[in-house]
Amino acid sequence: MLGTAVHLLYLAGDYPALQRLRPIPAFEFTEALAAGIFVALGLAAAGRVPELNAAVGAEVGCALVLLLGKFFEQALLVREPPETS
Image (cartoon, rainbow, N blue to C red; front, side, top):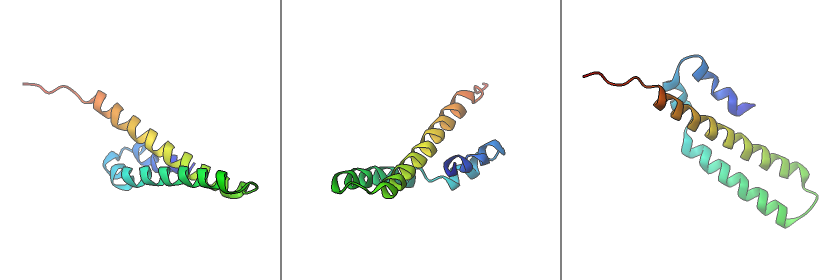
């Protein structure tokens, strides 16, 4: 839910503000880190359900932000009007 809240800026019509607020490299790093933590917790010990839930939540949230970000980039590339000569 928090990941999609950032993208409400796009719906408000301010895509440049969305690009400034959403640093893609930071979300990519956090997604990879959360996936690594999930694997480490899964291998280390059983019974750590709250920690596993937190790692999965962070990974899925970051992945959603990245997915929506790439979708918006592609949608805006496709919708750009052709240049006139």
